[in-house]
Length: 166
Length: 436
Image 1: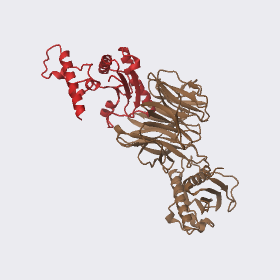
Image 2: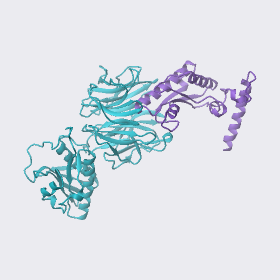
Image 3: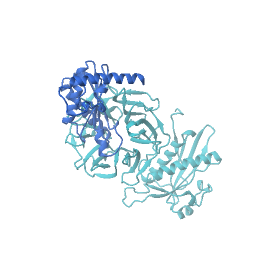
Image 4: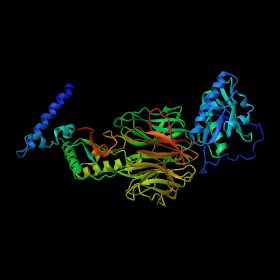
């Protein structure tokens, strides 16, 4: 517990430095951290820590679709920036589906989703050797629940750092 | 003959009275006005208490099998008039007729000093008093359940004129825990849910097991070190091996009807294509070449054609092609998403999952796409598998927010029954009739 707290403190310290460095103009917002964006140089967990206004570690897809919308592209662009700031880091991209499809088709659909993300990362200049994809189909839902709200959260691509540098 | 491997020895019994020259089926089960045949199953009679115990256990398994098939109505033993054991040698047909029995099964049971059990069974037509079948079954005593299944198959075959399916097993995926932390294990059991056994420990995610034609191996998908690949496991030894050496995910495996090939899907760069691998020569052949999803392949029983699932038209539909990948034809032409086509062991039908308007359906159609019939529906119903006689389907079904469970249904759409499993269950695959 203690070491984790220390790491968290260091991470916050690095993060704060990054924030102040990034800030280019005075904000109207009274809470400066709300408008700051994470520095790609921080650890992945801080970079994607939503409680600290980080980028998400996941993007979402429409039903039976695998194309990235504008919001999803913005998130993947941030992942690319992080990867470029971490030379040795590798990334695992998981493709997931909701439960409203058949098992084998969903394995294929999850692979399509993971590869749509991979292709965009490569287009953004991330070497293919640093990206691995895996499909879990409908096997690993993020949330329980059998309604559209839950299914929308489960149709996702999730990035996880793997290997050194993360 | 090895006594361990030889499950059962069968003998024909001489007819008690004149037997019919031809074994004509007693009922026509495809008659639309068909109603279940009333059958009385007298407990096989022994001469000691252990023998009578064994007789009762066997009788219970047979009774459960026949009534679950939906083709028989097993009469309540409490209504039997002749139940002092004399029916085993001299049935009084008028008394069986008076309780509404059309068919009567009697038998004698012997426990031998060498540890074997022997059952001599006779099937009678009550109205004529004719013996329809006389057969003896012998096996090791601890193998008595298979004896009961063989006896069930013999009765079923004699009455319906169709092959039985009771001496079979089912592999499936056992599911435990909440949706976001689900543990899945490979499991195997008798078709009636008895003798459940787990084949994996739940550490790795496993999916979609299917039997080899010998019922000695299964092929399935396992995530080993986070990499989903097709494996083959030998059931008795637990020994497993990866199928081929592929750069991407391999999934949706099935054996070819001769057992020499695995047909499966290989995904590379997000594109899924259907491949076969010859298990003897390791030769790999690609059968589809399309940027769409091509998956869930299943051979016709003669091995000449393959049905599969593709979204090349923009939505999931069912296709048929020749075994070499030529002659691709779309066969599902109605609205809705169609998936998981599985060719019947008789060759005459393809079972499928259909999704439309938020509902899942299990249905069958002919290989030319005509004659579509929906058998059941649910919030989620998926993955039909055929009993070896092509008359019964098993699949899994789940209510909204509920747990997946296995069910069987007759090809007519009648008689949907849950199959008992220790926990949640999905991805069933029915074995061929057991030989050993």
